[in-house]
Image 1 (cartoon, each protein chain N blue to C red):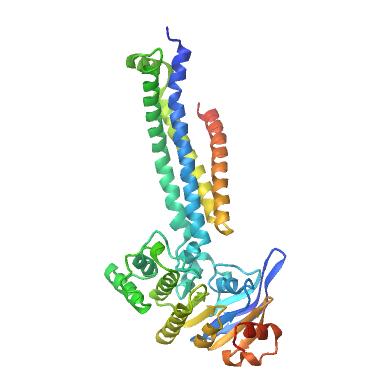
Image 2 (spheres, one colour):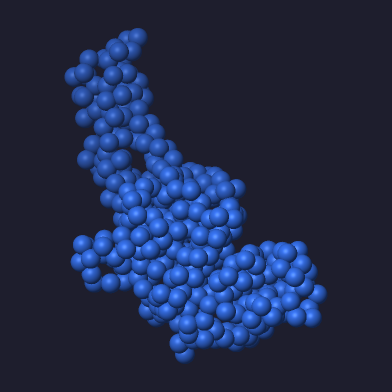
Length: 175
Length: 243
């Protein structure tokens, strides 16, 4: 017989899927830092200012808006792949479940609508945190190529820490 | 007219500019020279508002730019263009889009007119036919030429050059010097050139400022520079083979 605990373990793979996507998003943050940091050290940001562009509006705002729109989608995609992963794992494991058992268990042990909602809210906060850290560190990069490397490393570390803290705080508030 | 009054700038303990004062009349072509790391580029960045002084004033056409808000400064910047040391071309845009960007931002021209002006600027710097190239495909000299084309495209009153010939071979240096001279004469601009090259100073500028230890050690005609009594100025001239 399959215990409820075992089913819960399999369903939790959905959460792992979401977390993997967020880790991918941290890599995206590193890319943003490297891109903006390189623009800073090659004086492209100064050049933008000299031709009357506000670099914050031109470089930072579109990335912030895009991340606030796309990160919740990323979380949804992560959830879907997590569930597919859970289904594949549970139906092809040593003592496999049937697909109907998996979905029955899913209905029994999760509140899908609430979980998705929490995921989307978390996605918004994670997106804001990762992108704002990435843009800030990129924008204020100094010290040439070495500076870009340092800023990128800082972005990855600070983003990971901010996600752990936000995850804890949001879970405490929303769940 | 650009007027600098009692300008001071420090980075930590190191004072770069000390009570620096001078003015640049409209239509002048002036070179600012001095040893590396002495603050020439920093002075140029103060003139376009990219840096704020610790104290002192920079005024352009009677407006003190270091006291302006970002929006007010943007209006002044429409009169000024800057050519950066390595071109500072936007690496996600091709050459023609780089040159057209100031026109798109600063004018109400139609897209066709913008493109024709941008092509004319490229023609002026001898880069016709390179419109679709990306900055990564350009040589150092071409990047500087595109930078100059971008700077002149929006018809500025003042143009600031940050080491326009550094790192170029003598033929390209000569060609860029001629280009700066041609633009200065044809467009009736006020040109300010930060450089190490005495050839640029002698061939292009009407006036030269020698900056050392945060102060001006020589301000006058390039041809009379060898009469200066200051040791550093004379050493600079001697080493560059201009004495």
